[in-house]
Length: 364
Ligand code: ADP
Image (cartoon, rainbow, N blue to C red):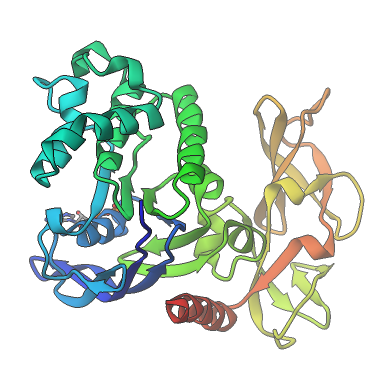
C-alpha cells in the first residue's frame, strides 16, 4: 500500500452560516498517525469528513498525496474510513462486506477474493469470512470494518472514534491491534479522531488539539504532555493543575508562597499560570512545599487522588496508594520539583502554539 499524506490548507467548514471548522492548517506526513483530539463538538469529525469528501469546505483546499482532492467525490480519494458504529451491511457475509469497497472501485473480479482474505488476515478475522455481522461480537465487527477499509489498499486511513462503542477491556486490546496494524502498514497515513487522551497519547505520532472549531496546538505526545504551550492543552491532555501565579525572579508567587520554577521569558510581575501534572505532585515535605487542607480523597486502585486546598486553589495530587490516606479536613504538605512545572502566560502560549502550528504547516 502506498503512502499519501494529507494536507489541510486553511480549510473552513460552515453549517447554516455557523463556522464549525475555522481555517485549519495541518499536515499529516505519509505513514504518520495524527490524532485529532478535542472535546465533543470541537470540529474533529468535520475535519475528517472534509478529507473523506463527505463535507465540502466553505473555503480552503484538501490535498491527499499532494493532489488537490477538494472537488473529488469520496470514492475517488483513495481513502479507507472506519466509524464508531461499524456500519456493516447486516445482510452481507463478512467476506462480502469486505469486498464491498473493491466492487465499488471496480477491482478486477479475479483479484477480489485474495484481497479480501489478505485484509481479513490483517485484522485477525480470517476464520470469520462466512459469518454474518449479527454472528460477531462488537469488537469483531469493528475488525471487519477495519478490514473493509484496508481492502482497497488506501494511502490514507480515516478513523472516527473507532473504539468508542467497545467496552474498556476490548478497547485496550484494539488499541494494541491498531498499533500493530500501523507497524504493518508503515506507509499509510492515519487520521484518528478521538476525545480520549489515552488513545491519542498511545497511538499518535503527533496530536492536533482542537477546541471550538480551531486547531489549538499540535505536537508529539511528549511535547504536549511535558511542555504544554496552552492552558487548554495542559488541562485537556493530562488534566494538569493550573495555578494562577505572579512571576518573580526565577520563581512564581502563589498566595504568599514562593515557588522555584524556570520562568523562561516571563517578566517579573506578570500574571501567569503554573502548570504541574498531578502525578508529579508528591505528598510530604520537599522542594516547593505547599501546606493546605485536604478537601477530597479518591481511591483509584494503584493511586490515591488527593485534592488539597492551598491559598484558595485546589491542587490535585496523584500519589501511590497510601496505607493510611489523610481524611477530609486534614492538614497536609505537598510539593513538586522545579523542573516538573511549566509557566504559561497568554502571550507566551499564543506565540508558542502558533509557531508550533506553523512548524507543522511548514513541514508539508
Ligand atoms: P466533534 O467531532 O469534535 O465532536 P463535529 O465536527 O462533529 O465535532 O461537530 C462540530 C460542530 O458542527 C458541532 O457543533 C456540530 O453540532 C456541528 N455539526 C456537525 N455536523 C453538522 C451538520 N450536518 N449540520 C449542522 N451542524 C453540524
